[in-house]
Length: 212
Image (tube, rainbow, N blue to C red; front, side, top):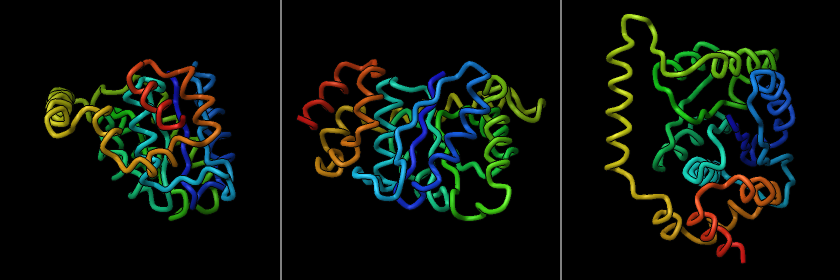
C-alpha cells in the first residue's frame, strides 16, 4: 500500500517527526510512504487545510496512493476538507483506539490528526501506537465482533450514498477556483511523486495543463 503524508502550513514544522513515526511503523509491514510536505513553515508551496483536501482527493481518485495521513491544528478542518470530495472517507483520529476502530468499523482511506491540540509530551509515541493500530491488520473486519455484519453493510451503503452526492473528480477539478488548485499542486514534492504514480490519464492531463 502507498501511504501519502501531507501537512498544511500551520503544522509543517512537525512533518519530519510524523514521517519518521509513520515510516518506522509501516515500512516493516511492506507499505511505502510518500511525503508530499509541507516540510517546513517557510516552504515555497504553502498549503491550507482546504488545499490538503484537494490534494488528498487528487491522490486517491487518481490512484496515485492508496491512503492519506494528514491533519491540521485540531484535525477537524483537514477532515472536513477531505470529506468534501468523492471517494475519500476520512476519519478524525486522535489516539490508537480511534485508529483501530476507524480502520475496522469505517474502513476509510484517509485520516486527519490533531497536530497541535493535545500534541505534547509523548506525542511521537502516540503517533507510533496509532499507526500500529491503524495499519497493523486488515481493515473492515468490524468491531466489536457482534457488530460485523451491520457495520460492513453500513459502509457499503455510505459508499453508494457518496456516489450520488458527489460529482466525478475531473468535473470538480475543472470547477474549482483554478488559482486555488494551482497553488495546491505546485509543490516540488507533489510534482515528483504524483506524476510517476498517477493511474488516471485524465486527471494527470488536467493537472499538467494547470501547471503548464
